[in-house]
Image (tube, rainbow over all chains, first blue to last red; front, side, top):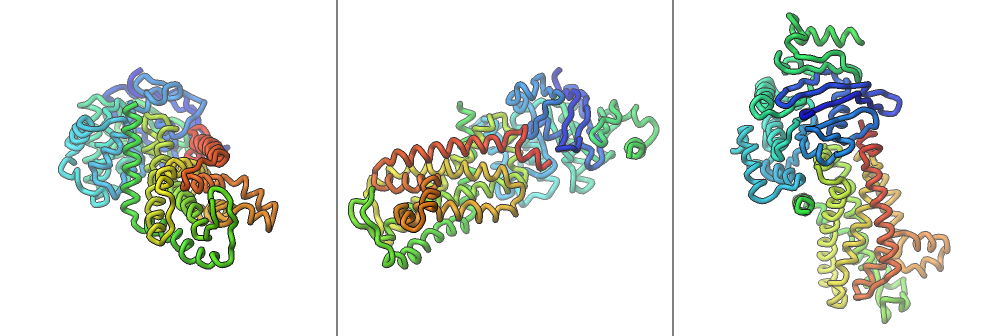
Length: 239
Length: 263
């Protein structure tokens, strides 16, 4: 399928099983929240989805490309924002983005146009020549989101993208990414441990101790309970 | 192919910018060999007599002998510095950005090596310029023929740094690399004294020096500075480079590499 498909994924750090039979699909244009407490296996899953790790057990398909069999085609379709910032703080916003563009084989006018379009989309065009170090946390994250759009990916992976940000910046970034799924038709996988970032219309995958406890659409799943309570009840029962 | 070259250019530019920003690193890279040349060599000049061995055609003073070794020292330290910055990049996350590019991983790592080698060569030429001001010069053509030797030595020592960086889990462990890799490699080589001198004091030490790839890198540079080709040294350096690069690629293999162990 297009979008993102994860089938029966297993991964262990030595004896410790980090992911145990994880399966879910995210369709194009869908925003999928991967909700789990710290240590649930979200970052491990992100590392497998970006091929920083590989595992012989399970299958990952990105925009129709099997990441094990065709890693380069799959990676070309992925835009990723890691939990830890990956900006070079001494370079300007523009230079950070042009470095990334070059890693995807883009240069010259085409790269410039795409960089400016991505920055405008995230309301960061005016800050293109500011040094990344001078940006606040929210703007750094926006820069990273703009950066992951330059090569026009089909699938966006964001690992705790709002960690350390204040409420306003968190809201702004979650809104932006929702709009990327809704308006641009991107497949979004949004890993978080904060239930207030999830909307009722989002697909929701609850991950705990390396296993999926529940998945579906957030609204019907939580029913009349607030999502936070539903999440705590679900994960608390498994401790 | 254009995508490959675009990435190469960007990675070299980024390393060059980082190097320009770190002026302290540049100054340290120059001061270190200059101290050896001006202080250490001055002391040994009187104590150490050197016989005529190729590529030298006449008696030379110790400070002339030591310059190619110091060029090798710059390349060695820069290779390790580059490996240190790889560990830093990995801790800071920017390595992830590099490794999630759709270009092949071997090419991305090779680009890093090429970038570090270009910077090494620039540092060596600056040092040779300062040595010339100090009065130590080489045949004019030697300054040209040394370039390929510097690039090959840079790639080999950079590959060593890359291989080491894949085994170092934390920045703090880098001090161990200094003690157990850089210093033995440097002192157990022909950088500071000719191998036959070493043989006079210890056969075992001589044998260790003779298999040390850094010895061959230094000899390759020494001959190249006199526009001569030392084929065995070239062969050893290339062989060591290929083996070390293979080790580095193995270390960065996503199926079993360091990133996996870190979790």
